[in-house]
Image 1 (tube, helix red, strand yellow):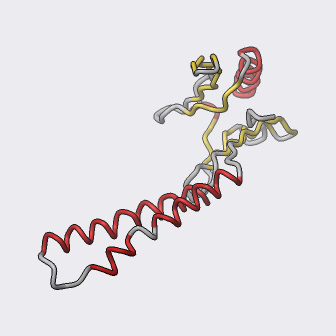
Image 2 (image 1 turned 180 degrees about the horizontal axis):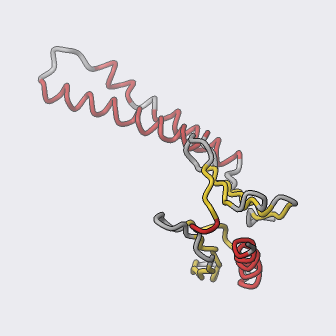
Length: 161
C-alpha cells in the first residue's frame, strides 16, 4: 500500500513516509552546510572593517541555520492521522514535536478527491479540511476509483454517529 491508508479494528489510519535513502541524502546536505563557514572562520579576524565583519557573520550564520533546518527535516516525523472510532475524533500527529491533537469529527468537513496533473499523467489526492485550518492533501493515487473508495471510507467514518 503506497498510498498510506490502512484500516484496522480501531479505525482508519493514514501515515506519510520518507524513505531512509531520502533522509540520509537530506542529512548529508545538512551536515555539508556546516562546512561552508569553515573558510570564513579561518580567514576572518577582528581587524576587518565593520561591513566585512557583518558579511562574515551572515556567511557563518545562514549556512548553520540552513544546515540545522535540513537536519531537522531528515530526522523529523511525518504526518500521521488516526480516525478513532471509539472517541469519535481524528487524532493528528503532526510533523512538529508537539503532542498529538484530537479533533472532533464535527469539526471535519467531508473529504473530496482532487485531480492533479503531472508529466506522467493525472493523479488523485484526497482533500481533508478541518474547520478554521488549512486543508490537508493526503496521499496520491494513480486511479481515481481507488481515491474515491478511500474518500468514501473516510466520509462513512465521519458520518457514523
